Length: 124
Image (cartoon, rainbow, N blue to C red; front, top):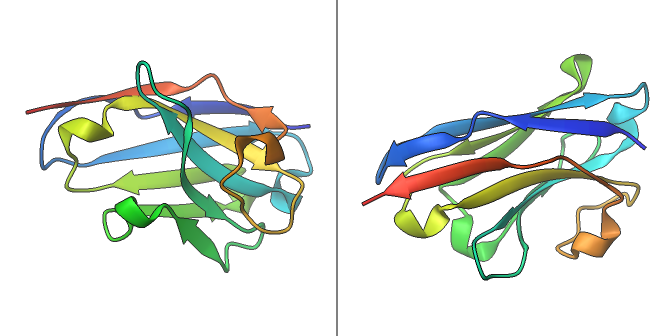
């Protein structure tokens, strides 16, 4: 397993942008498929975006395509989530996760390492 630590969350006005980072420890980071999920109060954890271990293939929740961008830098053991045109409904705790699957999946159970989460709050 890898250990994951998210950062970059905060309070932003609607229409603003944030860039989340997820730093991983462990020599095998580059072999993991990585994903971002989010969970709002009272709601289930939902898939946001995923990226294959080489970074060549990315996946997004349909509702977020065009606003969010996932990327990774294996040399820095870091995965990023660039979020633009933020809306109040994007308010949630955002988690990064690592999976042994070769392709990102939307199912949280496919991911076996999770970070502690970072709060994103979008004000109207």
